[in-house]
Length: 214
Image 1: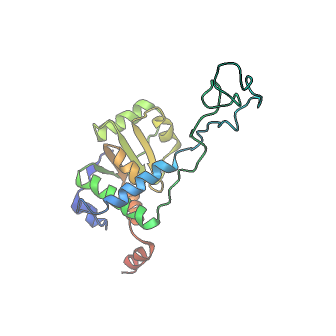
Image 2: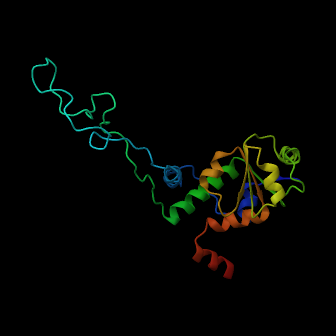
């Protein structure tokens, strides 16, 4: 198993419309990654207010004659065990991003990694035996980087088994890989078939049909 660096010329030959302008696509990339991270937030943080905290509504002591400040209820926020003022409540953090923005963000992230020489192309990537040492040896044969993303159309069960304990290295299919994944890792190992899928995902469907007809 050997890998070659995907050069700019090779990427263009694969019909990938590279973004060479550093400014172009940055806003789309920012919005997309912010949306991905926001959509992962559970939004389940919750506190009780003075109205929902458990406790009696009885006055803690009489209104006058004690020398203390008057108090109407034990669930007051200023008392121990009372409610929380302006505390968090369950909410939805999700953000919507349209397909065109996601497509541009993916193209920008892929272009940036290709221009920096961080994308490696292999014919295929599969481990015959589900051994971690075999997986580590295969990755080290391709690159010395610690954080590595391996993208393929599919992986054998033995490959998934061998990779499950190697946390810095992530296996991902070409359908689920997104802009955030591409920027997270030092090196990206992509099979030739997966590269074709990634290129198709950076182009609008109607333009893909036009290119295929041509």
